Length: 290
Image (cartoon, rainbow, N blue to C red):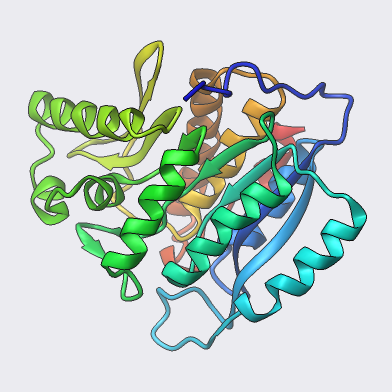
């Protein structure tokens, strides 16, 4: 499969369209509420396709969730009549395998050979799958990842996608062995068709690393660890990465920019005793993206 990442560029003077396929959570500063302002600040038109509507993100003790798959065909019919083709598609939280199948169909209907397709395979964290993650969803997510120009799993999700025990991987984050295992897993995803893999939020004793593998090789970014898992951090990372690549930057430069932005925002949140489930204090740093 040809890697479209390096040829797919939009002039910063143009208003590229990005379909953001993710949930809408009223509390938690994640998913669509994090992604939409980021794309707007970076001069791109964000077009949300909500996968679910939630009263608050699922890290809260009590939440209400409404699956929105039932309205998708109405969206699709409207967009097809408009003749819509997206410059980029970013896929995030999906409610199950049936919805993941429809994302594949969505890409074929509203993308083309020049559409940048980024998949954030939301399956689990901290060595455990999320409650809605089953073998059918994992299998369908692998299909989406095989179609993607870039995927952005965390370490747990990388393991689930490649058949590795995620609990053991998260527990053993020693240097050389971890690096070897990540390289092998990323190479397996790329062999299946994915253009590039950015493994996010790899927590070691004193730092957090992002591990990027492309056809050019491997790069690693490293930032201080604040020993907290912030709601929305992955959504912020994947949104900045997608926007930067669409605007012509390399994946390496895009990952560095996303990491720098998150480091500033998470540091601010930690210093101000922010509640992790309420998300990252990212709003004041949006000006850095303009």
